[in-house]
Amino acid sequence: MLEKDIILETCLEMMDETIAFLDKLVRFESLSSYEGPAMEWVYEQFKDIADVCEKVPVPENITEDPDYSFRMDDRPYEGRPNVRVVVKGDGTGKSVCFNAHIDVVPPSKDQERPFDPYVKDGAMYGRGTCDDKGQVAVLWTLLTVMKKLCVKPKGDIILHIVIEEETGGNGTLAMIRHGEKADICLNLEPTNMDVYTSVRGALWFTGTVYGRAGHSGSAQTTVSALKMAIEAMNIIEEYHDDLLKETHGVDPLFLKYNNPMPVTFGQLQSGDWPAMAPQKAVFKGVFGILTTPKEEVMREMTERVKTRGPEWLKENFELTFSYRHDTSRMAPDHPAVNILLESYKAMNVKSEISCAPYGADAWFYNNILNIPTICTGCGSINDAHTNHEHVVLEDIAKEAASILFFVQEWCGLKETPVHQRCLAVS
Image (cartoon, rainbow, N blue to C red; front, side, top):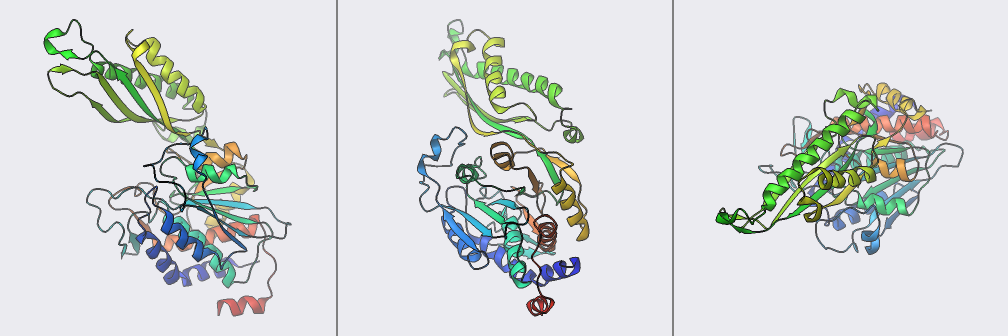
């Protein structure tokens, strides 16, 4: 049994190495569809600290999977593998699977040095520092510390380091279609080290409305696609309000938010001339969901617009969906939840059970593979995707230490002679 002080001290002693790891990783401009070089580097970093480290190709026909989302462009998947890492147990303990992603969103306006990270006041700034490369640094630190301390788990430790999370989880989708067995999964995302047992779902949608174009002086014969699009958006907003009232209290964790499942209209494009009724309008947005299955929400959104809107919309409106995530929910009283909370407490980290009012890849494991899945990690979601994205470097060490304590309690660790352990940390 490793003492908690030894675990934390060793993680903190590794800070310079962890900082160097994260610094190098952030320098890769691994936007979705451009993760290849970063993944090759990640593979090289993990292959000597694990029993198994393999590049898992993403098949080109993943685009035909019913749960496939979208990609930023038509770049092939060749040369952009996921990485699967395993530290093998002896089969006498429970297993754990970790998920973290390597892709990042584009730099924000006025973001300083997004791919040239810098340290200020104990935090590293740059694109991906907390979402999600800081979490990959946590996993690298975890396995490196285990090797330094000469400890091996009784149950398998499995890492899925994936591409294309930001565009809907296509990398994770490819991984879970291979199948994976584990007793618990930790989906690492910036949660301020709180323990999220519920992660809400989300649907990215595109509404297309066709009108009858014409001159402003022919209003009796024209139909403005733009005005019809606004009608459709209002109906979707009304459906959202009804669904929120119906489902808000089903999962009590979400009651802390007035609207944990917002509908957001982010884009509207229509028209070629101010004095002309447009022939086509396209609006795009995201619709959050709590407990209702995504298929039901997609069907009802479309039906609402076609049955409660103007007659014109019945034949001249279509709604399509790209990013499609169901809500992931596991029992807050699951034994792994309590162990993780106690692990954070052991490392002097304040942590509580909560929920994510945003989407993540947790549902792939929880809902499809039936592996109970917790979302947790260092850093704040309020800093992700911003021009000030950063992660507190000491929090990476504390997160790694907490997870190692969790592994010790959940998976079990093989006994290591004291003299070997002392040599490892000397």
